[in-house]
Image (cartoon, rainbow, N blue to C red):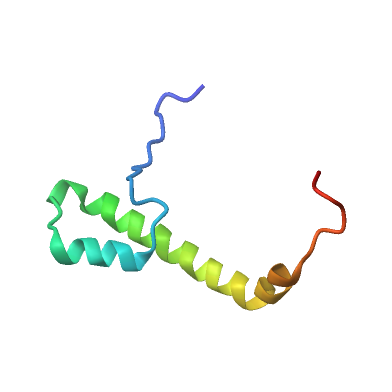
Length: 73
């Protein structure tokens, strides 16, 4: 059993895009104690955005044109 627990700062901006975070920062200030959380949130959202872009470039057309052959009902 571990003696030290691992904690990871989670914010309510976890699923947003980097553009939204930048717009929020344009009109609001961040307290210094939240700089780490903001940096992690921005980094994760940037990584997710890049992965989504790659997915759309590689698989986007195939996903859009996919039709299920079986009836859902």
